Length: 208
Length: 208
Image 1 (tube, each protein chain N blue to C red):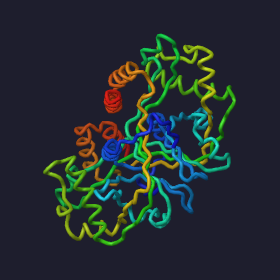
Image 2: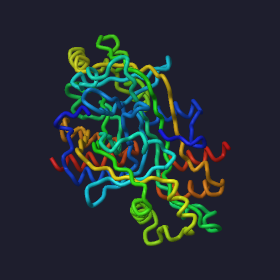
Image 3: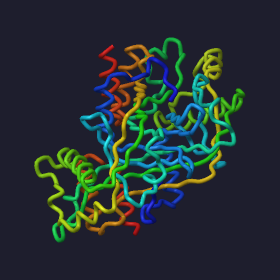
Image 4: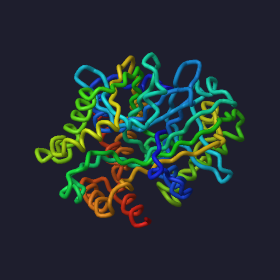
């Protein structure tokens, strides 16, 4: 990824927060079938791996080899930024449009897991996380489904862990602009309903 | 992409609408530097190509060759779906969590353009589109910037057209569920603030 120094994201908490807030990863690999991309919710484990599962019918687990580099992309908020929103534009008119966005690129290797224990662990972990977020203490549990039904569903999937070799993250939040420009862009984005991008920009601007 | 028949999106208008509503493409290519992904706003032209531009400092235009297959991914709304939201769950308890999402994969080849005419055309087209959406008749225009400044900015970029070979799109909107399940999931997502996904599900459910 093209990454000017002022847009490079190095804060580990920010990177983890983005993965947690936008868990649907785009998992990309170059395979014998060409470039393959699949969209899969992933969770970062305490051991620093990414955990997920795919349909057993998805040929990805046959196409990707254990020694192959793959890329998991997590995409945060994004928004068009109009030059009209920079107050300093009025002085020099030296502004052009841009696009703000936040992304995390995780480079690593995948180990597919076909045993029931690993599958239950992956499904259990993802379910607990997203059910707790969605329904709190009333969250759905694996045990709510009949045993036979659950067994059949587990037969339909393959679990995996992604070992992380390298993370490259970009927070493109107008950091190369004057503080008053950032402030007003955030205000305008907020007015246009882009609340997440607006709050990320304000937070980053106040950090500097 | 793994694509069960019931999730395949074949409606051309739906595909164009997603590209238009989520223009920040993830452009992926296998290069001599490994897998490379860049995030670039793209627009579909009347001639059926995708138009964009990148920083001249982005090595992408040197790494990608004209005869190479690349992939532009457009990602729409996505949302976690709890089994608790399916009314039919109460009868059989035979439901598990899933993730709904909409994506468009555009496979094709890229022609980079280094001449001023092509650069102005690309920048002008994208600017007009996004300024009109954002500011209506008061939109910023290229002519609002000083000539010398604009010339320097154009020197900093490379334009490109992506010739489309193939589009594969997936609308994963619970189409494999009962109508009353889809209706209630859409209602719950709406309550959780996932308005776009909710309205896409309701629209698709009413089509069938």
